Image (tube, rainbow, N blue to C red):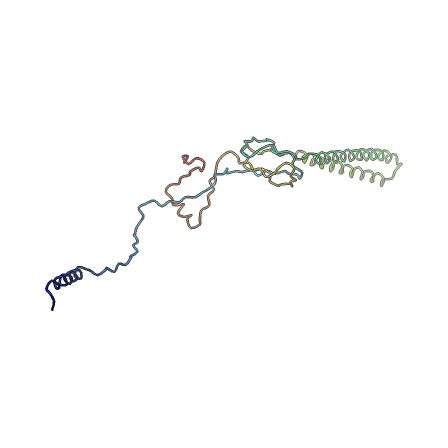
Length: 234
C-alpha cells in the first residue's frame, strides 16, 4: 500500500524525537537562602555627623535700661576689644531724668541747710529759755528728717547718673560679634539681648548624636573633624 520512500522520513523523525526526549533533564528547584556571617566585621564601621564649632564662652549683651536704639556701631564678624562701643540709646530721657535728679538734690540740700540753721537758733533760744524744750526737740527732728531726705536724694542721683551711662552698650570681653539682634529705631527693654560675642579662647564642637549611638561614639578608636568650608583641613 505504501512506498518505502514514504517510511524513511517518518522513522527518522521519530528517532530524532526520541533522542530529544532522552537528552532533556528536569529543571532544578532553586530556593534562596539567607546567609549571615558570624563574627567581628573586618571593615571599620564609621558614621558621619554634622556639627557647629562654637566658642566655649559666649557673652549675650543687653542694655540695663529701656530706650530706643539710636545707633549700632558694629557688624557681625567684627573683632572687638573690652570697652568697644556696640550700641547707643537715645539719651534724651536719661538726660532729663539726670537734670530732675540734680534739682531734687539741690532742693533737699536747701531744706537741710534751713533745718540746721533753725536748730542752731533754737538751741541758743533754749539756752536763754526763750523757747520750750519741746520746740527744740521738734527743730532737732526736722533737722534729722531733712538730713535723711538729702541722703536719699543724693543716692537717687547716683543711680540716675549710672543709668545715663547705661545708654551706651560696650563689649565686656575681647572676641568676635556672632549675632546682632537689635537695630536703630528699635525700642528695647532692660536685659533684652541685642548682641552676642564669642570670646577668645577654647572652642567646642557641638554635635547632635542619637541616644542609641552614644556608646558607639564613646568607644570609637579615632575621631576626625573636617571643616565644611575647607575639607582639606582635618
